Image (cartoon, rainbow, N blue to C red):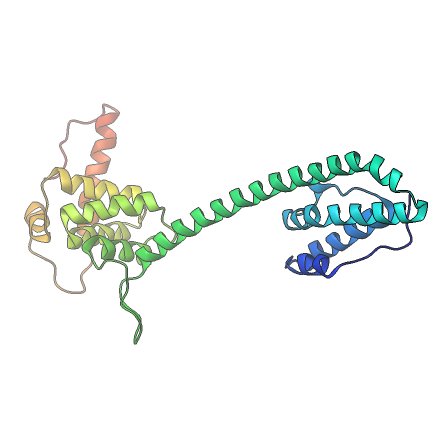
Length: 258
């Protein structure tokens, strides 16, 4: 039966105040009034989770207020006794729905926390020096960390954690300078992608390169003067890739550059 009024407690206000989205908060107020005045049960699946959680806590109080008002009008404690099992069953239903909603909210929070951990890890790769006048940077200042930072700065600022981990492993084995040279080669070839850079590093790894001196000896020339490009390296490596494509298709017996 419809009612013309109901008691709105301060606890209702405090619960709804925690809902930051104004539109969702308004939906919460509408749902409470519609339920208290007309007995219309809210569609929890259509409501935001924050509103649903608040309603699970508020609706049992509205039920109790309605029962108290009905019993006062009819003046019958006998009626209250008869309706108590039904009221308890409904309150248990609200409680069960509230538990399910809380569990869902907890799962969402865990997912957000995991995503934040991944974001923090990626941010750690980007930082290479401590802030001026601030605390010392907690990220390790290693060759792997510096190479990752260089890759993020010059190649792909949104690189995946797996590619950064693989790049760090190359840095530890081949050295920081070799990894930076591979990035330079890829940029000069206008193919600055992780698969291309990884192919260069794997090639040098297979040839036993551990330093720039090894690289220079392998290419049969001395280290370039400051400011020079790495176009020759890119062309040499491109010849190897072209040969590999022809070899795999059975169209060439020419061997890669050594």
